[in-house]
Structures are given as structure tokens and as C-alpha cells.
Length: 150
Image (cartoon, rainbow, N blue to C red; front, side):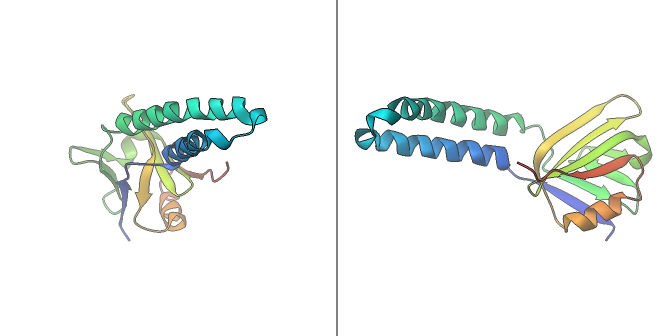
């Protein structure tokens, strides 16, 4: 395996959680008539947080419009392809971090020239993450980390 592709998704775990909170907010609104008096404050708070969560999720999704649709790590030619327009050699990377959180991968690269490329966890890998991490071990400037904690 000489190439690993990271494919951009339109969602990530945070946007999923925000949408779920919004759905729970909708349920709270629909069951408002049967809600006990002692829970009314919590219900109103939950109902108010639902639309805010939707706005926040949509904002997160729209902020990723400039992300490349695919990031390719080519280990044979020792370069990274960010979208169709930009290719970065491994030796140009001063500090690199590939981080995985709940199966979604983010990439942060700082080049020797000072340029930074930071992409949040909106990518999935076309191979097993452990295999991808083992391929990156041979690249000293790029580190792979896992963060599967809530």
C-alpha cells in the first residue's frame, strides 16, 4: 500500500451530537403539554438550545467548504496531495499531526516556510487506521494520535 486517501465527509461526530440535541429539543416541544410543572424550566431551556445547536452545526459544516475533498498521502513519492491543486513533500513538513477522533481524521501541517494547513476531523480513511498509523511511523515529521475519549 503506497497511497492512503482521506475522504471528506460533510459531517463529523460533533455535528451529529448537535443534531441529536436538536431532535431531543423538538421532542421536548412536542411533549410540552404533558410535561410536569417541576420540569418546565429544563424543558424550556432544552427547547431554546435546539435552534442554537442547529445554527452551530450548520456553521461548522459551512466552515469546511474550503477543505479539500480528498487528501492523499503518497508514501512511495513521499508527498501529500491536498485536493487537486497543492502537493507538499514530506521533507517540507516541519510539524505534522494526523489525529483520529471516533473514526474521523483531522490533519494539521506546519511547513518549513511557515504556512499552516489545519483540517478538522471531517475525513475518513480508505484503510484501517492502525495500518495508516504504522505507515506514518516512517515519517518523522508527522505524528499520528488517537483521541477516542468523550
